[in-house]
Length: 479
Ligand code: P53
Image 1 (cartoon, rainbow, N blue to C red):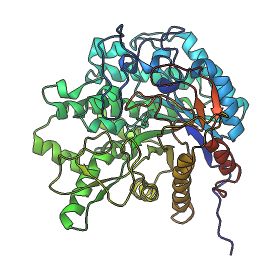
Image 2 (cartoon, rainbow, N blue to C red):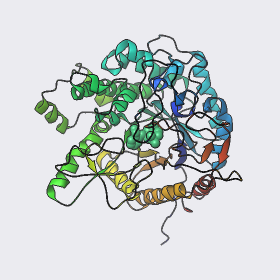
Image 3 (tube, helix red, strand yellow):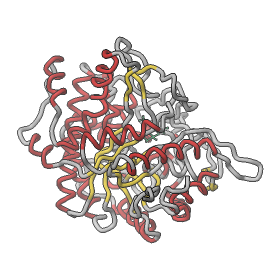
Image 4 (cartoon, rainbow, N blue to C red):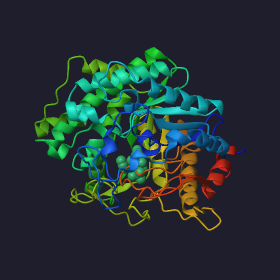
């Protein structure tokens, strides 16, 4: 018997970005400022600053980013050349509702995404759309305190319904909140700020506040799923979680048990979105800590009715936890409370490279949720060098992706995991989220722009571009 070595015909090979990390044009055609528009550039080990407004004397890398807003036709032509079946991006909420609380949307913003999706569909590329990818309106932070205010639920639902109605015949795959679980690490200001517009460390009880904020978001997510299905019953609407599996440091029973407890941090919000209710362990934790999360009477029903159709997740690395070392790690290179893994190498930014961990992740999530999965981010942030003849030989990136695709294939072909697709992160170079750098590149396509904003914005195919084209062409057989 021949053993199948290809992924199914309808497997969605593609690439992923987020509006704020590629588009630029931060204040064009009526767009309002988002939370990232007041984020400065940092570096590995240097935090991005959150300035109170757009101030003179600071450099804001997302204002221009890769200028996808003006280059999207050229970029989509390159995606089509690679054979993309899908392309994941987000809608910038602030192009549609510049302040966030308006009654009427901004037509110029809606038109931009109409044009973008039409351009994709022209080549048979399916748009996969995140509704909120770290780019909520800055006005909602100033005026309402971000997601602390339950009114944000209504604003988000109004925005979601507006775009789901508008694009109901163009977009089938949606996701609500990108990496909703990042903010579980309430100690690191960037996470709460980018997910919800709240800096938890400035709150009286940071952890309790985080749960309240996320509760509002979970209700909003469930309502968007429910209303989306009413708009078009064919919609597939997913959650999106940052999935960093935590291995026990040793086979010491205490390490094993601590890894199970620590994994709750990874699972919690996905559990609510995929199963429609809060899991048992969180009720016990709230009781122990004396937390009171305010919920409306109808919330239970909303969460139950707004269960997602699939589980989208990002996978970059695994981490290791050891009982008794709960305060190690910084939470940016991974989990707060994580120790190094002597068996795996690290990227220049300290992210541990572990392809086998992807097969492990796929098995964990499939066994837990029994829902289709979608790897909506994976990739290798690295510094690329342009040779004298203009070529870019990113063999390190090819090696990373090849090893991950191999493990992904095992999960599908050997373990029987139901996987919708694979969209490597930053398929065209973009601004790094955690550091704001341009030099932390992920793309198959190089963008001529540096950390200080110099460069022609010219696009170039890297060696990995030609590699990925073959992978797609062969259904993953040739790696
Ligand atoms: P950059 C942590 C762990 C895994 C994924 O990150 C993460 C994070 C940080 O939140 O974020 C995702 O650009 C995120 C993207 C981001 C990408 O990882 O810092 O969804 O917006 O660009 C890569 O290298």
